[in-house]
Each structure stands twice: as structure tokens, then as C-alpha cells.
Amino acid sequence: MVNIIDGSAVAGRLREEMAAEIKVMKAQNGIAPGLAVILVGEDPASQVYVRNKEKACEAVGIASFEYRLPTSATQAELFDLVSRLNNDKLVHGILVQLPLPSHIKESEIIAAVDPVKDVDGFHPVNVGKLSSGLPGLVPCTPQGCMILIKEVLSDLRGLRALVVGRSNIVGKPMAQLLLQADCTVTTAHSKTRDLPGECLQADILVAAIGKPEFIKGDWIKPGATVIDVGINRLKTEDGKNKLVGDVDFAAAYERAFAITPVPGGVGPMTIACLLRNTVQAARNINGL
Ligand code: GUN
Image (cartoon, rainbow, N blue to C red; front, side, top):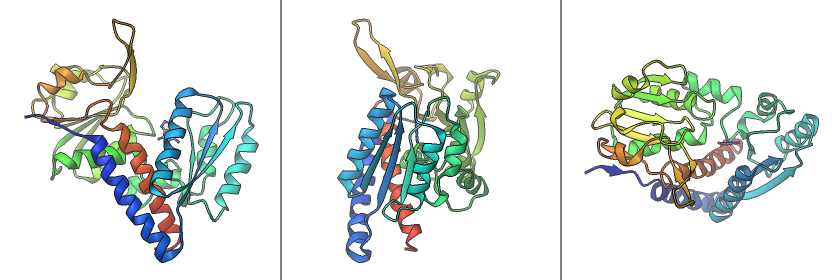
């Protein structure tokens, strides 16, 4: 029997845990965790994400503050806003929705966020902490992937893990987390030679490429755990939209020990981990 890892169910449990913790924080310490989300421009996908984040915050009792800036906003305006939020006592987490318009230097804005409020875990201080094995805020999507892997594997020590994709948001922090769990980690990317051969050796395969059904079923090592980070829109023959991952699910299912579906796998975990990071930041800031 293949395990289909139910990310929606795991995320639901995590959200319930967060709601309970927030209730206690409010009652015992008078603290309501607050998350500020900054959205610059009109990117439709980003607008959907931001709306979902707000709904999720409200559902667990996190105060949500939204800042929408026009595409024409300057870097200086964005710096000013981030600086104000860094000093705002009601705000424990700051998330700047990416991508930013091309005239804004993303890395400079990320570096302007106070690392203790950096619930994305993208600030160089948090990146450094993760790679040094120090406690810090960990990027949400890879954090969610680790939780899903641990749902089906109790001991990762010595397993071969392959991360396909080397982005700062997913691939690189994912590799760090797997290394921390004592996996033997390889990161593959667009210049990797013999990607099928690399995949065939992987006990754990994390696909974060952003190309629909790029990883084929016969690349999967029999008995592997497959984590699919991809969310790609495909048009079906009858003209309908369909969401697919970076892995050919139906074929990979035939060989895997466990696999995440798309939708309903990694996707719901990202926001659940954002709520978790916001609660963590509120706790850290208040010395709890
Ligand atoms: N854009 C796509 N994924 C993310 C994410 O995890 N955080 C932020 N801030 N922007 C994103």
C-alpha cells in the first residue's frame, strides 16, 4: 500500500495546535500574535496567496495587518514601511510577498526586515543560523516538507535525499534541514547531468523545480518517499484547468512508498508553518 501523505489533514492539525497555543498566550500573557503582510503590485497569484494567509491568520486568532503598495512604489517607500513594522509592538511577523517588481532589490528588502520578525526565514541571519544548526526562523515550505516526511519515516538517518531545485525559498533550506536530520543530501538543478540516475538513488526525493510532471515515474527508486513542492496549472484536453506537481503522480505512485498529492500535499503546509513561525516569533520577542 502506498502512503498518500495528506498535507491538508496534517496542516489542519497544526492549525488547531496553533489556535490552542494562541488562546493560552492571550489568556496568560495578554499577547495576540500579529502578522504584517506586504504586497507590492497586482500579481494575481500573489493576491490569492495573501488573501489565503489572512484568512488562515483570522481562523487561529493571529492579528493580520495588510499593506498593499502599487507597482510604482519605490524602494525607499518599502524600506520606510518595513522599518515602521520593525518597530511596531503589535507586529511579531513581517512577510514581504515575493516576487517584488523588478526595480526593487529583493535582497535589500529582505535584509531590512528585523531577523526576529522574519517569519519567512529569508534574512541572511536566519539563513546563517539554519546552516550553522542554530535556532532561528525556518522557511515555511521546507519546514512543512520535513513535517510531512516525518509523518511516514521515523528515522531519516543515513537515507539518501535528493532535492531537485536550488532556490533560496525551498531547495537550499530543504537541503539544510535534511542534512540536520542526518540524511546524505544531494542538490540537483538545471545543470545536473543524469538527473534520472540521481533520482533513482534517492530514498527521499523532494521536487521543487516548477515544471509540470517533470520527474517521471521510472526515475523513482522503488520504495522512495516523494515530496512534490510543485504547483503548476495545466490545461486538460477538454480545456479545463488542472493543478499538477513537478512529479508525474500516477506513474510515481506505482513505485513509491509514500508520496504527496497536488493539490493537498505540501501546499497547505506552507501557510500552516507561517502561522507556526508567527507564534514562534511572538514567543521569542516576549521571552516566552
Ligand atoms: N512567494 C512565493 N513563495 C513565497 C514565500 O514563501 N514567501 C514569500 N514572502 N513570498 C513567496
